[in-house]
Length: 516
Ligand code: ADP
Ligand code: MN
Image 1 (tube, helix red, strand yellow):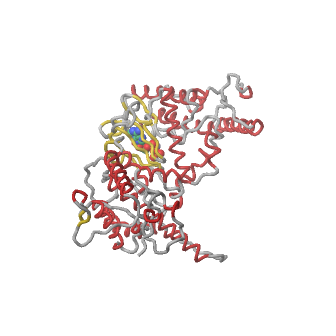
Image 2 (cartoon, protein in one colour):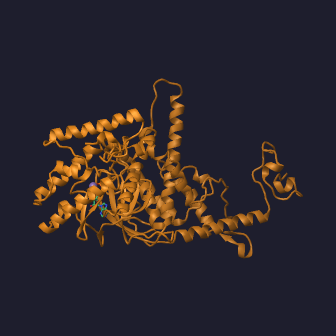
Image 3 (spheres, rainbow, N blue to C red):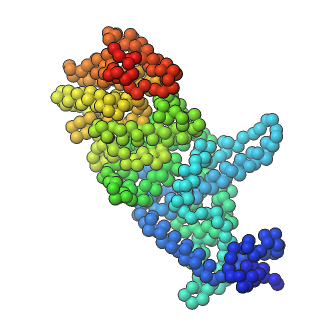
């Protein structure tokens, strides 16, 4: 029988790419392309080196997992599990692609079309990010390199001398495990990994097997709670993956548990680890704020970000998932501004997509109490009031920001002072509703301290003027509010006429229209 291969076809040319010496539509019975031993060896060596590197990058972390990926409490950080999860996600994506193809086939040119959207595993907004692809690739070699799995002959080994390969060999075993995925329930989408040279370790295989079961149950639930991708306490698989990566990279030591589940975010506590770069120090304790990927709650927040000129250009083109990332980004930028002004607030550690890691305000896993939950002496109360007055002025003048959700719920009492948190919705004062937000903040602060017995506390209108430096003279709330809105309107008109915003509302000459 003819052996058609590179070596046979061009014995003198040496090893080279197939296309150089062989017509692609040439011999129909060609099944393998032989190449020189040196090539095989160097490829193997490269694989081994990569494996070593991967092992160094993801050292084994001992963690007890009760079941795969159920809650924030039993996060398993071993990288095998992470890989299993990544595989699962990739399978989900392929499954969805297949669904889409079938959808297209069935619908054809028909005017009435059916949709399989409810059967998709991945939320449509999950799958379109190029960054996601990068993340997927950076921890694993390309899984799409097709390669025929080798089999072990009956005698149980192949090769000679020290190059002997038995059926217990990691690589062979891994390939078998990949093939065994065919036995999973038909609902469990294994992608076309079976035809590829994927090598699953026993641990990964078992994790996948277990995941196949829980996935069946999850699929059933999914129909009822489709939108709830970030459930109570738990977070979605993508977020978990991000968190695993932070632990695996050593940046975080452990994620201990959940501090808060709000409408728009879930906050975890973590012990800090080591930074990859020398210049950055990870705080000993961190708070991880995960912005919820559930889209519903964010709809009514549009007005904060839509009109924020810093995000204006980007808003229109974005899907809701990207908008949520922008919230996280906004919180990071705003915290940084505040940090630079010396306002007590969490320090930003890192931002990854919709996950913001910052320093933890509190100690030994116990978060500092909110101002609403703490009972302060009248002396501390007065101290807190003046501190907040000061911070609001700094925020406005030095950071060019209005908190926009300032209340006793977003101020923590720690180390004998008030710390500001939760600034994702903060805007610049020239935001079309910036002054209204500021007035609302002032009302909250003023009412809290007046009720709290601070006799010196300014009323909301006085506080507004003290913070903004404006001098609105209306002596009742309705007129005051009307004047605020008139100022905002003037600013908007200025934008219309001049194409850009005023840099500030202040009365020191720039721009003169606001001079009192
Ligand atoms: P939300 O938008 O859900 O209100 P927050 O930023 O206010 O989000 O965080 C929710 C809760 O989590 C806070 O009330 C606070 O108790 C806790 N928290 C948030 N950030 C930190 C932090 N850096 N340190 C300690 N606790 C925090
Ligand atoms: Mn809050």
